[in-house]
Image 1 (cartoon, rainbow, N blue to C red):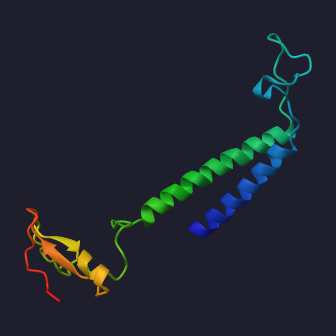
Image 2 (cartoon, rainbow, N blue to C red):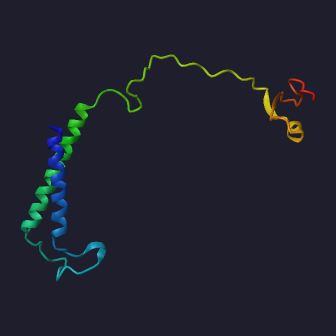
Length: 136
C-alpha cells in the first residue's frame, strides 16, 4: 500500500512541477514586472485550465503527503534510532580501569639525549618522581 501511495505521490510531484513551469507568468514577483493594466480596482481573471490542473495536482500532493505520514506513523515501532540491530542491551559494560589522579606521565628527557628508548615515568603532582629513575 505504501509503495502505491508513494508512486502516486512522485507522479503528482512531477506533474505539479511541470504545470507550474508551463504557466504564464503574471508578473508581480518581488515587485518587478507589470501585470498588464492591473490596479487596485481590477477584478481577478478567470482561472485557466492550467491553473485548475495545478490546484488539483497540489491538493492531490497534499493528500498523498498526509497519507504517507499516517502510514509511516502506523508502521513505526517503539524503538529508538539509536538501537542497533543485533546489539544486546543486557550485556554488562566493563568499567574503565582506574588511574591514579595524582600520577602524571612525563617523558624522561634524559633518554632522548642519550639515545635510549622513549620512557615515561609517573610523577606526583608535587614534582617528586613516584619511582626512582633508572640509572645507566
